[in-house]
Image 1 (tube, rainbow, N blue to C red):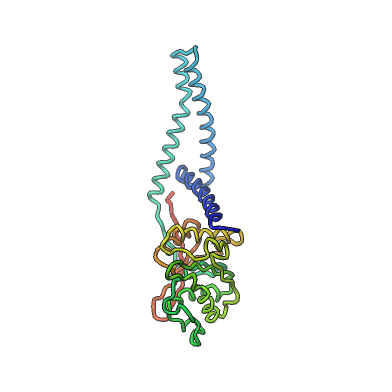
Image 2: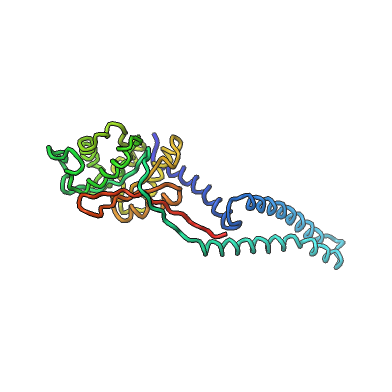
Length: 291
């Protein structure tokens, strides 16, 4: 049985890899060809410096110690000083570059994807019997569930959508328990609803995610998104995945934005600039570091 802990361990391992890349980027300013050459040179100097220090200490501890031999040992230790000076210079340059880095946001009309993740807000107006004779199309839905319908329609109408991952909240006003109601509304309002599958976290690890997640718990939100990402990444490229940050709470939107930025995943937002006017926009964040 796959549990949340299993995916947390995978996420931690992936995080260790990202941390190593970030360390190299911080020291050398990137992962390009010149940076890799710098790493190789550093490792060669480090090996040379280690042998030199060992030889120097051996001389100092030997019975044949003399001032002449001690000066020779100090001169031999020069690579160690050069290595320290070189690393310090590289670090200062990299830090200066990142201090001047700018975070830019790109916005455009949403591009159709194969997999969509949404946060489902609790529907207080229509907790039960959401499908009425009038609710046969999106424009007839006047509750807060109109937003996720529009988010899904933007991709389903293009014929590319294969999966919709719905993350529901736990607790007293649980939206996770309302997912069947939302799916019923979805099938009634979207003619393309039969062309894709609706998935939840409970499909991955029912024992851990069977009650939804706490929308006020940053750690749970990040774990939920990482669980879905790790589950589908072997099956699809990251550019086939997009996360809708409209539903849920402010903290879910913030957490989703950070996760998407760190993993290179696009995210979207459903805007409503006017009555019965909905527009789905896609966003991506990019860190621009000057040369």
